Image 1 (tube, rainbow, N blue to C red):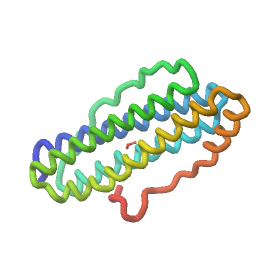
Image 2 (image 1 turned 90 degrees about the vertical axis):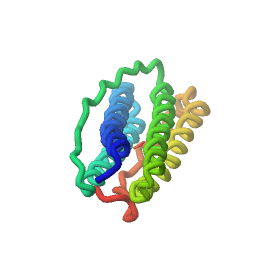
Image 3 (image 1 turned 60 degrees about the vertical axis):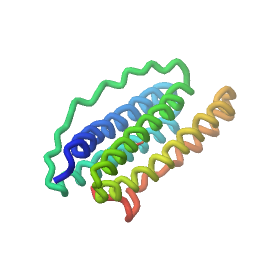
Image 4 (image 1 turned 45 degrees about the vertical axis):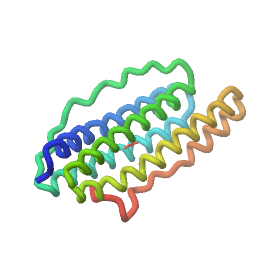
Length: 173
Ligand code: FEO
């Protein structure tokens, strides 16, 4: 059994991770429609990773004898004014997710729930990497997004992203 607050926050995080997947697919939909298939592909893979995160937390709850309760996944309601808008929204979103993971970590710390802290260590590291990736994309769009040839090359670079399942030291799904 987990501490009540930790249990509740982990349950909410499952929904938040599925929302992240939904949001990134929404970005992919925008880019596919704009003819930027590399960007669309990059966010499709990002959505897959978010689904993995949701499944890991779901598994952790189950492995700790907890009932998993799904909440409604919100509709992504962002309007993208230009090709840089989803990328910027992605960075802001990852910053929110980092804050959310940190809040669960803090709750686990105050409950002396060292097992959950250890489980969350992987997510803390992952958030560092995801924020860095999002920041890099924002910078690249600022540098190259205004020039069609450079945008074409950036689109080709993003098209090469390959999905890799979480590493062997990642929590089980
Ligand atoms: Fe699951 Fe991008 O955080």
